[in-house]
Length: 175
Image 1 (cartoon, rainbow, N blue to C red):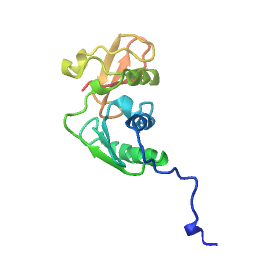
Image 2 (image 1 turned 60 degrees about the vertical axis):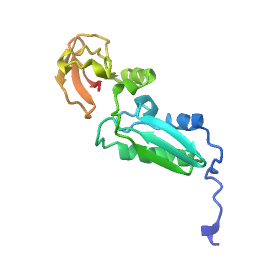
Image 3 (image 1 turned 30 degrees about the vertical axis):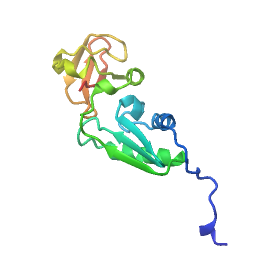
Image 4 (image 1 turned 90 degrees about the vertical axis):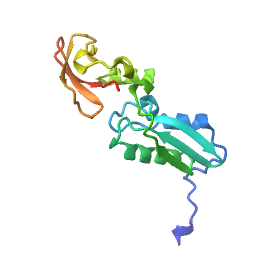
């Protein structure tokens, strides 16, 4: 029996009436590979969803220029949309204006805290020195913390330590 011509009924049928709201819902199910508790919508890197005919265009902005996770994120977007019947996908990376932590959702900031990463403090235009930022410990909620290093587990994080519970923790830098 020649199985090459057999119809695969498990693949989703392409959607001919894709709604923008549905695309946003699907994108909220795609997670950041470096901070897997955050969806790319929570992170604020999804800038725009456009639908023209059958083509769905997603515009994303990296958290910083040259972010190594962007290729994986683009691939995960494409795979998730394909699995949900959206087959004509265009992904555009926009570098300007530059991403800012101001674009993160409040829900995303709460998810960071629950995950053990201190969310950004203030707004990107505050221009505080890293040593002057008052960061709450995500473990014991103390404000008695100190900066250990401006560089944490990824480029977008700094390393802090709580002076009360003594636990080190990542802080998602405000930018």
